[in-house]
Length: 113
Picture 1 (cartoon, rainbow, N blue to C red):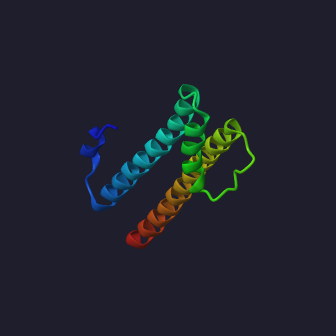
Picture 2: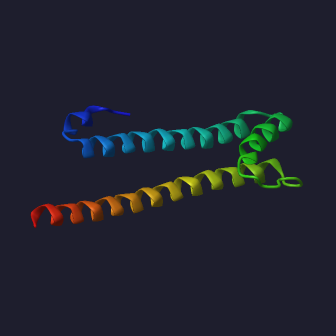
């Protein structure tokens, strides 16, 4: 992650936007690491008990009953959930950006009148 953009932070509002972007980048990197961990453990480990334990730990955060599923199916399910969480985060950020722009327009109209 590059911090070369920090030189463009000139006001409190741009500082808040910059910090929000940094938090978002860190969270997305965390989700990417989870996905890579699941894929790596599944591909590298021949011990199915170790694979199921790791995938189970990740899946437990989502409160899904995975009894009776194969370890491959659990891995695919965990990966899909992480991708969906990333997609929801993107939609949330898009909505927050839209709300920010609307607030900016309203503020500009109030200041200009």
